[in-house]
Amino acid sequence: MIDLNGKRALVTGASRGIGAAIALALAESGADIAFTYQHAAEKADEVAQAIHGVGRRAVAIQADSADPDAITRAVSEAVSALGGLDILVNSAAIGHSGLIADLDVAEYQKLMDVNVRAPVLFAKAAIPHLSARGRIISIGSGLGERVPFPGVTAYAMSKAALTSFTRGLSRELGPQGITVNLVQPGSVDTDANPADGPAADFQRSLTSLGRFAKPSEIANAVVFLASPAASVITGTTLTADAGAIA
Image (cartoon, one colour):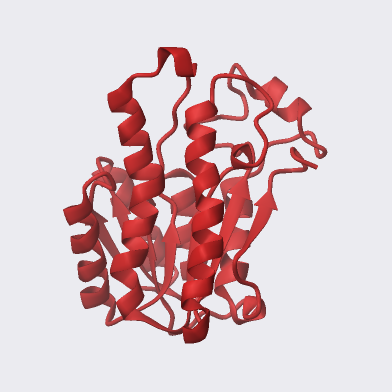
């Protein structure tokens, strides 16, 4: 059992799906949790109640990851509520499908604002508050490394950017003992991409294990990277995709 007692984490986009699983898994390991959500207040309350249920503090913060001012405010509220910060998990993201020839510029800009700019700005705001041996973990996608079908070019590009962000930031923060890593999920059974959805069989066919991941399995990877067991791991990618890019 990984012990994160006394640690304080901020998880972005954690009212549902992978983000919610990460917030709860960190809490089950002993961390107090602040997390952001945009619209789903009822879902956010359910996550907070689940965190309370395992005996940890939970702070739900409404914040739009496309809004730089909201990001700064969210980090400030998290630090104030928890008394500091040890772990930042950049989980908030939006999807996008469609061909580049048909790209809507406004949609593209929103994609980049949430998937690329927000992790940078959350890190910028959090760095002054992170403890020594702190952790920054971002959630990417296997599509950032390999694109096996058309129609996801812009989304894949937004996730690929997190690789360079992770590597570069690890160099900047290494002297402070802060590690920076990236988790790349493949197909995960969530509301946004259910394992019984219309494209699920095709996605399963791309994997070695022949199945979707559970959100809790992605959360396990994050908990490991947040733990003392990963103290020498930084600037790298942990791919959790059931072998889709093997």
